[in-house]
Length: 380
Image 1 (cartoon, one colour):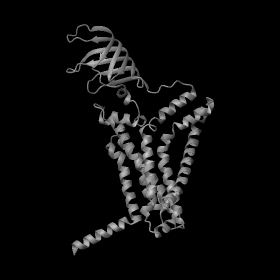
Image 2 (cartoon, rainbow, N blue to C red):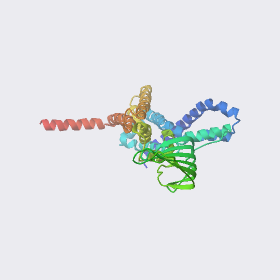
Image 3 (tube, rainbow, N blue to C red):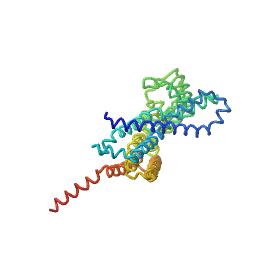
Image 4 (cartoon, rainbow, N blue to C red):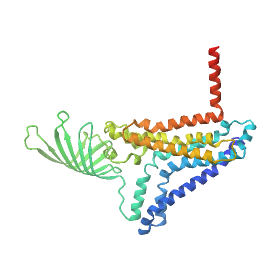
């Protein structure tokens, strides 16, 4: 690493850490006003309060990380432009693109961190926060336990009624199954089971009663059994409750499996889940895009005023997040395809930022010059 890289990175790291800490503290202070009454009424121990905010850090970091990087980069580039440090580096033979390589690597590291958080910590932040609040309030926690679940398998037509589904233990309690005939689709059997356990990709019904309906409308045949190896049941406990969980609270692997499971619910119902899946692919690319805009606006020879570049950057930041939020809403509402909803804001602002960056470093001028030479050569 050259001296110039170490200098620029060391100048960036300090304001970046300062912005991170400052934004996290502001977020905690705002949230504390909303939950302070619960903490006081329940005499919450300090460790539980700290845990309450610690489990939410991953979710808050998705917004704070790119914004903190953006503002710290504006501060550093604004100072370097104001004191002519960038001009000094360029006079020493370094191009602006070469000087920004280290900062671009930081932008990629921020994006990579967001991808890692999206995989597990960010989706589970709300459930862990709710469980911590229940612990503060002295209420029992029911994580991964769902009550009164109704599920119909789209491929087999089998309908499940379960009083309780425990996804972690892969167990259902008080189960009622309606099994239709594969050809006529008329209910062929009704099975009642005290428990249903899912092990080794197979269901076992425990303490069950099977009521078989005859075709000639005679009396049904009733059979009581200790257990049944139910090979005809192909759904997993997770698939039964997946549609009951908000897509934002699903781990990325779980979200991927639910989207590409066969069969799955209608496209209208799946739009919200697909949009969230593609959104997690697209959103971390915000930091490299903000990197382009920061260089385009903050690197300037005008050392008398910093208000104009700052105003442009704030407007860009506002429009970018607004566009992403609106596009995500349209995708979840099945008004535009999920992948377009997730990537269109990134693509549009990315192209604008790349053009402004190219104009700042001279790429646009070089491209126009080459096009003019090509056109003049053809005309000649």
